[in-house]
Every structure is written in C-alpha cells, then in structure tokens.
Image 1 (cartoon, one colour):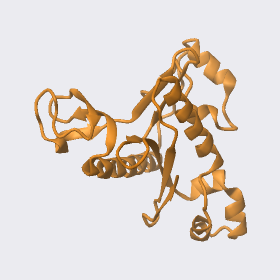
Image 2 (cartoon, one colour; image 1 turned 45 degrees about the horizontal axis):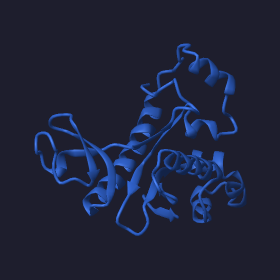
Image 3 (cartoon, helix red, strand yellow; image 1 turned 180 degrees about the horizontal axis):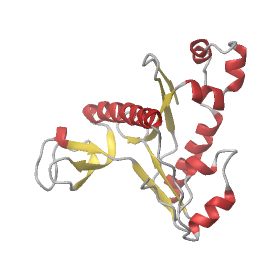
Length: 203
C-alpha cells in the first residue's frame, strides 16, 4: 500500500506481465487502484515478511549485514554494518531492525529494494530472500511441475538454479548499485520453502 508510484520497480518491470501503460499513468501521477487483500493473502504476505526478517536477523547477529537500521525504541536510523547500538539513544543492537537496501537511478526513474548487503564474507554481495510456495513454482517453473506430475515437493527437489525472473531482478539491482558508485558485483539468492523450511542457496 505504501509502495512508491513515481518510480519503476525492478520486481515489476522484469515480469512478462508488466503493464507499461499502467506504469506510465502511475508515473504521471494518476491514483493507484489497489484491492484490499483477503485474509489468506495477508497471511501469505506476513509469512514471507517473517522469513525475510529471520534471515536478516541471522546476518545481523553474525555482524555482516550492512545498511540502515531503525531503532525500535526511538525510531531513529543508524547506518553501518551490524551496529552494536542506536547512535541516538544507545539502545542495544537487539532493538535495531534492519531495513532493506534502497537503490535508485533518478535519470531512469527506477528504484528498488534488495533484502541485504553483506560485508565481511569475501567480496561484498547483495542477498535476495525468496519464500517459495506451490504458486511460485507453478508460475516461474511450470516445466518442473510438469516433469514432477504436479508433485510440489518433488519439483522443489529439482530446483537447481534461481528462477529467470529473479535473475533479471538481481541483475537490475547490481546495475543500480554500480550506478550509485557501490562496487558490488555479486548477488546470492536464498530460497526457503514455506512447507517445511528447507532452503537453497544460489550464488
């Protein structure tokens, strides 16, 4: 509901279903028409948010996640790599909530948010965390579902690389980082299966 409408979002424009006409009207300032999610859809969104927050917290505990952190006590923002306290009220790191990495190119009117920027584990890398369910496989890897005769768990076992749309999205994020002067050339995809919390990592 609070997503910006004055820019193009990589997660939208890489999809075959992207409506260029709709994006044009939003860029021109026309109001966004948004349907209220059903309770089931809200549960799906919240589960995805929880999975993202869990992985980000683990990287924070490791001391390797870089970016901005919002203080749960005073709402101020602290920048850095897993800071140990809020720079305003000195609340401990446990009260600092990691925010996504914002990337923008004003000339292209493109802005995106990736799930993390990791420092200290080799080269700097971005991370993209994806919660995977049956709908994800049906839409992004229908051939795997077909080969598995519709068996979702069997199809998940055959996932060997990131899905095409995610690769395009990641490449756009890396390009935006370069345009902003950040020398980051790698992105890692973390897929977590909602059904049993198994996961896969794709550098």
